[in-house]
Length: 388
Image 1: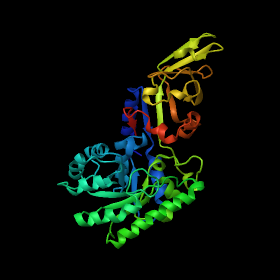
Image 2 (image 1 turned 45 degrees about the vertical axis):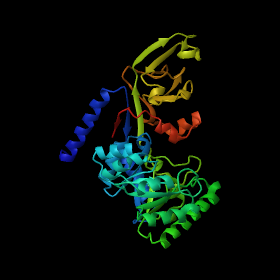
Image 3 (image 1 turned 180 degrees about the vertical axis):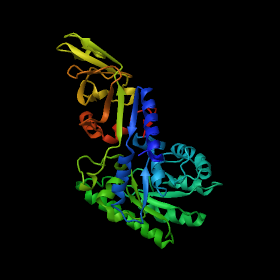
Image 4 (image 1 turned 90 degrees about the horizontal axis):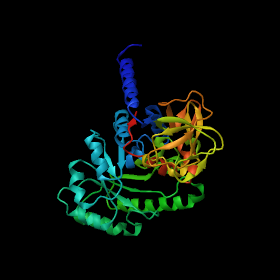
């Protein structure tokens, strides 16, 4: 078909092709997979529950505004969770009009900025609450309850005093939330039950005090998968919308339909033949045992390709796995392409994602270097171009 939609898609594809031709490394985000993942979680919860997409920390490495813009188009009612006023301001600058909640600490000097840009803040301690009470322009805010994770939040025992302060100062929270420490691990069901129990008690106190219209939230990705009956008024989905379960050890049947949305690519910038016995890279950590064809990739640990992948990592070249040789440098990495036919300068190389029938996903890499897939993805350099 040659209709407007078809023409638009071809122009979009052509634009992406030109963009890629001018880059040494880039990240491709799969729009269909993103929307699929959001849909998976919407099926788990009541239709009345609000959906917050966690786009904090550069959307877990996937691209803050890129992800938010796509989700805001497909779901105008979606909320966005960010870490800071800086991230919230970025979304407003990029014309995102959806509700935005800052989950991290907001310094009091930023209250006016939050108010003027309609960014909701989190208040989690008495000092911040006192500062908010005397602010000229008060932004909307959520109260954070520490139900047992012991990071941010008012302890349940402090709830009566906190609510008295709210009443005395005539300031009303827009919402109240808590965060679960380990909802995806069956071994910790007892602790999750304890946290939910503590939060229920606080919610009862708020109800008794007349706060009946506030938004209540307790579940993030893991909680939504394993405790959907406690969805309350809002769920907050982070890693799940990017295609990975919160716990790689405890995967629910509900998360099997999730699709990783990120593919990280680079190119081969140089190829050469190295004779047997030669060393590769800094520190002479790898010595080739036979004549070897090597390829240079113009990426390194500055880009977020972890140095612990030295001599152990693999990438995809022409649909085949290729091993990393020597130490990963700051801006360059060497791979072995000896057995891969027709390899040439300019070939696309997949560092993370799918090429042909082969996959190298975040869980494989994170397991190899003993870090979490959260850490791996969020550490990809935010300056690398993201394309959807």
